[in-house]
Each structure stands twice: as structure tokens, then as C-alpha cells.
Length: 369
Ligand code: DAH
Image (cartoon, rainbow, N blue to C red; front, top):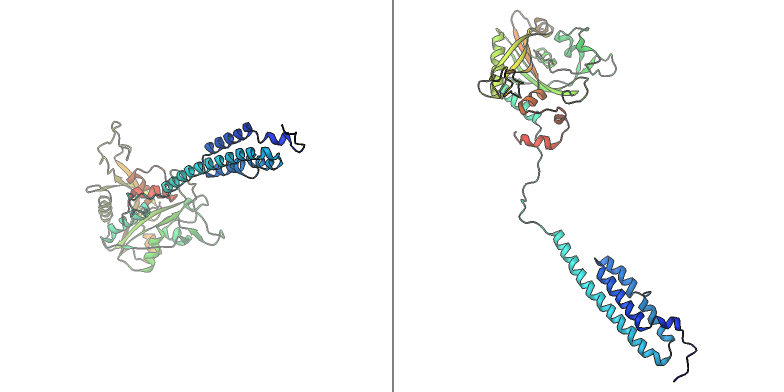
């Protein structure tokens, strides 16, 4: 029996016991096994195979052992560390394979996907219907004319026989351009383009003017402060209301279908005399649903007719304001809203859809040009 070694530290030696070393190996292997990815494995490695791990610390104790115990403890700890190292390497290999497979899957390219279908947007239906309408009139020999959106009160109101006291001139309806007495407004309709055209060229005049107009309304399902109209004007010798009616009927059937006609109802506009409300024959039921509730027609509400715009014979006072002799020339004029036309033509129920510029609204109209 050898004498007890005075330098032997029983607390430190405890770390070198068979049980402690075996427990450290089990703890390490469990930690490696439960690491789900390489990051977690790295943390487990630091805990169980790093410089401060139980086995590394135990290894340091070996030097303090009596020589007779050193070899055995050294062998035990050495084998344990080797085993931990192998488990770590095995787990590392498995997790690296898993990582590589994940990266490959994430970076894979689906070669069956179409490669030539980048979204290319859609033209706004307001633009296309405007062009479609213009085309119908161009085919009849009309000019397409533009006018300014910031317009003088004289063109927008006075020349059109809307006197200073006309209610449409009030602040509630009209956007005035600062200062209030500047005499300038955002045009409230496209009718001032009639005036500009008659001032610019002598009759015969056949023109249409699509464009944006402005009124002081809140944006909701049925109103928008910025909307669009199309204006028509013909001034020539011998123009009658029959020409107006025939032109509108042709317009209606070209836009809504063969045989669709218009109806004029007596009305009042300061710039036309006589004036009429312009109704469009319902292009869905063609009037067959009139008075019927079952099945009713959703497009015309079983009225058979849809309110479309206004029209009339150009008031001689308007011709006079433009220096045109009303003894020699007569004219007809009409105007209608484009948003409204689109709404009933396509069953659009909310005006906001037309102004918000969302391509999801625009796309179903296709890419007609
Ligand atoms: N300017 C009118 C409006 O904005 C529409 C209109 C009615 C235009 C009759 C016309 C017309 O040319 O003759 O409500």
C-alpha cells in the first residue's frame, strides 16, 4: 500500500471519476443529438467540447494526481474526449448534409415556370373608352380637340350663357383658382372647349373634346371631384335636331351594339335651346324588362333607358358670343360623363375603383389599345 499523497485533492479528483466522465460524455452526446442546426451544434460544442467544458476542466486535474493514478485517469479522460469528438463530428456531418439540402431546395429554380409572362400592367379603361368614343367620331369626320383644365370663368360660364348669378358658379360647385377674383377656375365641364373651338375656326365645325373636369364634391361611391366628360359640337348650315338625334343614335349603336338607340327628353341647359336629357336604350334588356321586377334588369333597373348625358341645339347667344352669325349657322351639342358610361357599361358599382389606380381593377379590362 502506498502512503496517501498529501497533494491529492479529492474534490478535483471527483471530476475524474468514472461516473463523472461517463456522465460528461452522455451529456455531450445528448446535447449534440438535440442540436437541430449547425448554430445550435456550435453552442453545444462550446459547452461540451470547449476549453471550459467539464472534460477539458477534468483533463487539467490530471497533472495534480499521484503518478500511479495519472495513467488511468489520463486514459479515461482521453478516451472520453475522443468519443465526444467523434459524436460531434458525426452530428456535424448530418447537420451539414441537412443544411446543404435546405439551401439547394431554397435556391432551386422551377424550370417549368413560364419565363416570358412578366406583368406589363393594363391601360386604364377610362383611356380606352375615351379613345373608342373618339374613334367613332373621327370616322364621321370630327376633329378631336383639347382645352385647358385651368379655364377662364368667361369660357367656362359667361360665353356659355351661364350668367354671374347662375347657381353652378357658386363656391360649392366650382374650384376657383387663387385669388378668388383671378377669373380662373378648374373647368367644371368640357363645354368651354366648344367656345374655344368656335373662336378659333369658322364653321363648319365638327369636333369632340374628351377631358378631365372638376367639381367640389367629396370622393365616394358615386362622386369624385375629378372626373371626365366627352363633349360634342357640330356647327354648320342647316343643322337640325334630326342631325343630333341621328348622330347620337349612331354613337350609341357603335359603342353599345347594333340597333341601340337614344331618346331625348325636354330639359334645360343655358347653352342649348331647345335642350334635352339624353337617354340610352338599355343595351342589356333592350327595353324588354320595362315594368318587370322578375326578372328585373340590373343595368337599367327595368326602366329600359339609362340616363347618359345632355344635349341640344346650340343657343344663338352662344354662337353670338363666339362671333358666329346664327342666321346663317346652327349647331348641336352634347356632353356626357365617361366614368358614368364606364360604370353602367361594365357594371362598376364604386367610382373610387376608377380613380385609385389599382392595377387589379385595370387588368380585367385587358390590353385593348
Ligand atoms: N356641360 C353639361 C354638364 O356638364 C353637359 C352638357 C349638356 C353638354 C348639354 C352639352 C349639352 O354640350 O348640349 O352637365
